Structures are given as structure tokens and as C-alpha cells.
Length: 265
Image (cartoon, one colour):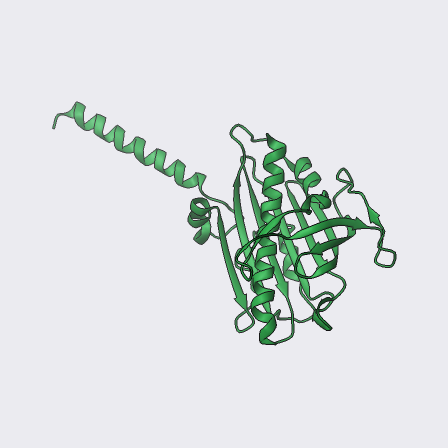
């Protein structure tokens, strides 16, 4: 092999190594464990469900970011919830969209009423059903007067009360707490009145908490959700509560992504 050919081959090998190295670096997402990056990029999500026989306090996919860290302090009335579901999503922005979308994200998550009519797959019915027939902000828990959305309100440290008319559980009342810092926005949704199955308080106040964190990374978004719940240790509740909770987490993700994509068109 002559010197010229060796030089060309050496340059080609160096070029491939450089390109592959850059590609590998580009897949680094510093807020999450490298153990999950490959799956997250390939499938768009990582998810897990944990029952009370295991550690329901550990948040495996929690981003290492300022607002998401606050979720470590969030719990139900028991130190160990009966069930935890946790998901992390990778959302590509439209081609050429690399600027900050925090204003848009803030508007979407404060447009609570747009959750009305979202669908979910009901395992018990074996078909897709409407999850919430009505969703709205209320003035307070005493009067429960319906208020319009205020999507342009200052989102950081905002607190509001809401009513979700749920297909399975009827009227459910939640407190929603928002925070925003730089390129990150978080929501903590806490049940404030019991959910009943007949005459039984299936889920008491403060025993269902959903945490949402959205990070704007320039050309993509990271969206993290977890939901923790306590309920009586009766077999009639297990499957229904667990499948319902997972369906609601998926529905919240689908609602956000659908709203985001519509507004980015």
C-alpha cells in the first residue's frame, strides 16, 4: 500500500471517528441517567409501574433539574404510596424550531379546560373512551364557581383549584401548583376531596398526586410525569386504580403534545 493511499485511509478513519463521536455526544442528555438515553431516543419514552411490594418512593427517571428535584419532597399522606407510575418522554420540536417555547408551554398548561374531551383506552371496556367530559377552574372549594382559563397569567408560583369531571370517578377536585424557572416548568396536581366508589372513600384527599415537569432543550422537549396514590388494600381497587392512573398519565401527555403540535403549526 503506497503512502498516498495510507494517508487517504487514515484521514477517512479519522473522519468517521470524529463524526461518530459527535453523534454520540449529541445523544447525551445531562439531566437523565445515560442508562436510559438510548431507549428514550429510540422509543420516545421510558416508563415503569411500581406496586406497594416494592419501593414506591424512588423516582428512577426524575430529571436532574432544579424544579424536578422538588418532586422528591412531594408525597401522599403515607410515606410509601400504594402505587407509583413514572414516565419520561422525548419530544422532538418541528424542524427548524430551536428557540425557547416557554411562553407557549405556559399557555398550554394553564389552558385547563382544553382537557375536556380527551380520550383514553379503557382496559375494562376494551375500547377508547372520553376521559373528562368537563374540566374547569373554580374560585374556591367552598363555592366551586366555574371560572374561565387565564392562560396568560404569571405561571411561576401560581396556585388554582380545578374540577375534572371524570368518566370513572365523577367530579374530582384538585389543587394545581405551578413553578417556572428559566427553561423549565413544573406542575403538581393534588387531589383535595375524596374519590368515592359507592359509599367508600377509595382515594382520600392528598392521597393522589401527579407531578409534571417540562424542560425546553432548544430543539427538543423533555417531559417527565409521575403519579403516586394511596388506596385501601382491597383487591377490588387494585387493577381499577392502577390502570386508571396509568391511563390518566398517558392522557395528560397526549393532551400536552397534541396542544403543542397544534400551536406550532
